[in-house]
Amino acid sequence: MAARSGSSSTQQSRKRRRAHSAPLDLGIDLGTTRTVVARADRGNYPVVGFTDTAGDLHEFFPSLTALTADGLVHGFAARAAARRGAPLLRSLKRVLSSPTVTAQTPVRLGAQTFSVLELLTSFLTAVREQLLSSEVLEGADPGAEDANIVVAVPAHAYGAQRLITLDAFRAAGFHVTAMLNEPSAAGFEYTHRKSGTVSSRRTRVLVYDLGGGTFDTSLVDVRGQSHEVLASRGAGDLGGDDLDLLLAQLSLTAAGVAEEEMATAELDDLLDLCRDAKESMVPQTRRLLITLRGKDLVLPAADFYAAATPLIQRSLDTMAPLIGRLDDGGPDLTDIAGIYLVGGASAFPLVPRLLRERFGRRVHRSPYPGASTAIGLAIAADRTATVALTDRLSRGFGVFREADGGARTIFDALLTEESVQKRADGAAGTIITRRYPAVHNIGRYRFVECAGVDAAGEPRGGLAPYQDVLFPFDRSLRDAEDLASLPVHRLGNGPQIEERYDIDGAGLIHVTLTDLSDGYKRTYVLGRRTA
Image (cartoon, rainbow, N blue to C red; front, side):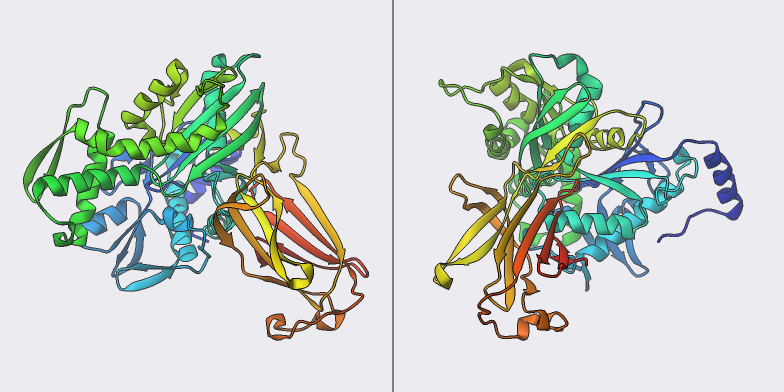
């Protein structure tokens, strides 16, 4: 756990101030390019500022990591180190979104290799140290037992990303009390600002969340303070990073420079310039100025829009299944109170333009698109607020089983993307069970996640397999150190076995296998045994 920064007298002063203040309620949005923190403060939800190396205040902490001679540095320090030639890591969150990621997935940075969990924990430790030194928090500790820290992941995130994110926050010293899906949090921010658009006739909010590296969209039904996510879709490889890269490629083409000719530091600088140019764009922008190797390049905005249209169109296609279709093929907006644009990349002028062309005047953009999720998380963390959320799994989950005496393999779809992971009344999410007599001495469970489950019960989209789970049906094998090394054979009349699957509020799936003959059980969370 990171140590509290500052002198002893400063710490004592903060403790005195803390004694007279309310418990700390924070929302933290770990973004692909920027991490944003918002605080609940008597019904208001201000964004917490971070100071850069020059002493200037920003409403975000860059999601950057650099490797220096003294070790890893993060945020603004990482950006400054990169300008001095240090190896720089961008977009760690995209590594997290891979279906094959594990806590030990290696990430190369300079001449060294780190695990994903190691890098993320180090980054979040730096975030916590910055928060501890913030006068805005009055010395309150986000690791204290009375702190309410709510964090988020993309709605379409696989279980491994959720588990790694949760483990890293806790290892960094944060007292995390809940994990929400990003567009679900943005739904809270919408009703906080736009409650007047919701009526008894129009209760549904469609959240369009285009961040730095991921795209999420959720359809949320709002009834008073109760929010129910009806469905979600997403893409883990679509975001503002792709727009920055596209603009960089246009710049290289205009300058007649091949990407292979560019040093890593030059490419990093170019991407920063392109991001700044993109974020400065307004609907009236006609030209973009990019400086490359001392030469000013003037790029028509129309060319950038034309090149970016397929990317934004992909986000609209991803969102389309959430909107009912009329017989004439048009979108059914009868129940839609608003389409809410959040995420830093949603400020790109082409996004609201294409959405308004398709959906009309119900399109609203958050006044703080880059901070909307963090503000929504702070609302969720606010112990004085009365909002409630029913969320859904947003992905499929099942197990491959043998059928016809082992002659073939079938997919047993245990949970679908419509399965409830948390109810507004606080009750447990979806719980299902399977019971059967064991046939073999060892049970092998090949669990996988997928983007969804189709009408035939087959997995849809890419598969994210867990490590196989092995369970001893034969009592004599319960103390075996390595079940995988033992031969599998038929038992004949084996014990009655129960499988139980339970989704918690973070979207993590708990699997409990029980021998009902004597109650012996083992529990796993996304492939990690816990008991």
